[in-house]
Amino acid sequence: MTLLGTDRLLEEAFPLIAGRRLGLITNHSGTDSRLRATADRLYQQAGAELVALFGPEHGIRGDAADGEKVGGGRDSRTGLPVHSLYGQTRQPTPEMLEGIEVMLFDIQDVGTRFYTYLYTMSLAMEACAGQGIPLVVLDRPNPLGGMVLEGNMLDPAFASFVGKYPIPVRYGMSVGELARFFKGEYGIDVELEVVELRGWQVAKGWVQTGLPWVPPSPNMPAVDTAEVYPGMCFFEGTNVSEGRGTSKPFEQVGAPYIVGHQLADALNALELPGACFRPLFFQPTAAKYAGQVCQGVQLHVLDRQVFRPVRAGLEAVAMVRKLWPEAFAWRVPQGGIHNFDLLAGTDQLRLALDQGQGVAELEAGWEAGLRTFRRQCEPYLLYARD
Image (cartoon, rainbow, N blue to C red; front, side, top):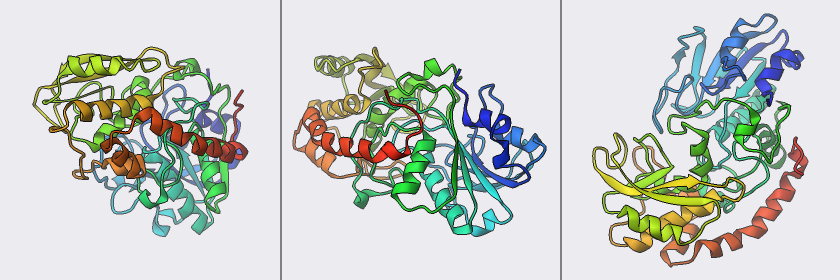
């Protein structure tokens, strides 16, 4: 079994926190390999003092919906003060950091650029740098592995909380490696330590880690969701349901105007590697088309080694636009849902799809940027890429 950073912290890396007053940025996904919350273990740990918790989007225990502002208060389990990093501020303030001698970060990411926890981490790195506080990342496996990069590089003109830096959609690093990259490439002058994973094989899938999956956010219930998310999340920027309010968010998409079997047949005719689209009906209980019957498709991953989620998701968006051009629409931000350009990190992708440009052609245009990014990452990698 892969050993997590949080497993190794108390067993092998305790000198990093011994005798120190600690802050912890975490949520319900911050558990060890036996599903014990890192916050609870540190609170009970002799020889170090956990004094404050910091919660990202969805809250410290994962009870807030997508895009919902989160308040502070007291943690119900430990009684410790909780500072929200998804409310009035998204960055720890000097007042929040007062009295903290070491900050820890322990949240599971999903290997995709538009997951907000990445920028909660980088903003905390900046805040800790300003106060001279070391930051320790308790590393976790990237559920998409570390071998494949996918998607376009973000244009800094479209930087937001769903994409702050020019990295690809699928960036192929652990969260600890990414923290090292942010520090080195973007001048974040923080004293950074990464408690490394033990036994993580970057070419293997999540199942091979032997670790249980704890949903890091309400609409990321399974590893299967994370595997399709880099492409199917683009439906958030359209008037097609991305499956929120169903049991299979991001795995299934649809709308009342879509004919499911027609969409599935058209997508399957593309013979996308490792992918199969199944027609279905669903009725969301929340979000887009709540209470309405939708037709659409479920994306099934048949071969994870060759499946490319960014291409599959964009092909699905392009096909809906092609088959139902009068009904399909791009969606502007509202209710916390970010629009397509922010997710894409550019407006060029949307404009290319509007002009009928093929996804394969777009992919070819990303290759040079991905090669450059891979070389740029090499000094920061902690785990062998064979």
